[in-house]
Length: 62
Image (cartoon, rainbow, N blue to C red):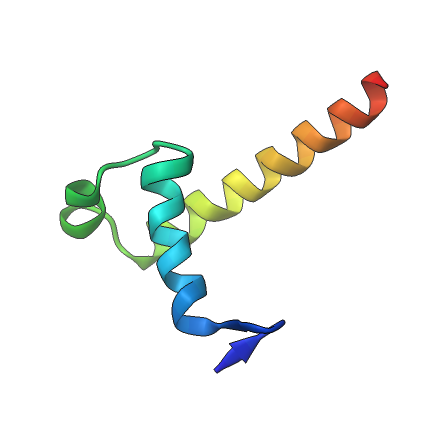
């Protein structure tokens, strides 16, 4: 399945690696052994909101 030109599987994989590589929220071991889908969804939603807030703050500073 493709969403906005991006494969659904790739989007899911990104949601995992984002937490590990970009935002350093968890390790791969933690995600595999301690997190469930709800945790993954919540973390990514919170990071999306954080990014939006940072963008708004940046725009208001300029």
